Length: 280
Image (tube, rainbow, N blue to C red):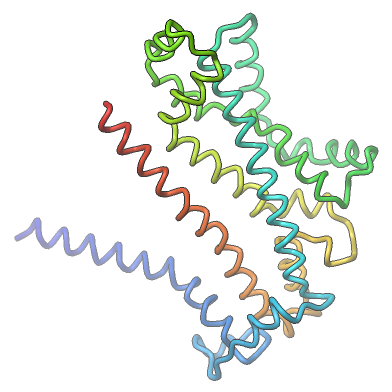
C-alpha cells in the first residue's frame, strides 16, 4: 500500500511539473489566434478568435514582419549547414576512429583542446575576417561560420565508431573492399542512430542561432534577416503592441521544421537501434 502511494505521489508531482512546463507553450499557441495585436495579460485565452494573424504572417508581409523572407533565409542556411557539417563530422570521426596515420593522436588532442574554447571569444575575429572578404551581410558568410569548424564536434560520433568491431573492416579488406566501400557498406549502416543525431544537431545550430546572425547581418533591409533576427526585432517597444501576436505565430512556426525533421529521422533512428540490438 505504501509503495502504491509513493508511485501515485510521484506521478502527481511529474504531472504537475509537466503542466507547468507546457503552460507557456499553450499560452503561446492560443495567443496566435487572438484578435488583439498586442500583449494581453488580462486573459489567458483570447476573448475573440481569428486566423488573420497566420494569414498576415504568410501572405501579407511588410517592412517590419517579412516572415516568408526570414523563413527562406534561415531554411537555406540551415539545410546547407546541415549537409556540410554532417559530412565534415562524419569524415573526421571516421578518419580518427578507423584510420591510422602519423600525427593522429596529436591532431585529436589539438582539436579537442581547440574545441574547449568558447566560440564567443572568436566572434569579433571572425567578423573582421569575413568583413575583409566582403562576406558580411550574406548567407554565404553565415554558412561558412556555422559549418567551418563543425568537424571539431567529431568526438561523440567517433566514440560510436570505436564500438564497431575492427574484425568487420578487416574481413572486408581481405575480400578486396576499398576504404570507401567499408565506410558506405559497413560503418554507415551500423551507425544510423548517431548519424541521425549528427544531422539533427547540424540543422538545429544555425536554425536557432541569434547571436552570430545578429553580429554578421547588419543590413537594415528586413528581407536579408534570419528568423531569429526578424522575430527579435518585433519585440521592440515601437512594434510590440502591433506585432506581438505575429511574433507568437512566428515563434510557433520555428518549431515546425524541427518537428518534421525529427519525425522523418525517427524512423531511421529506431531502425538503427533495433538493428544493432538484434545483431548484438
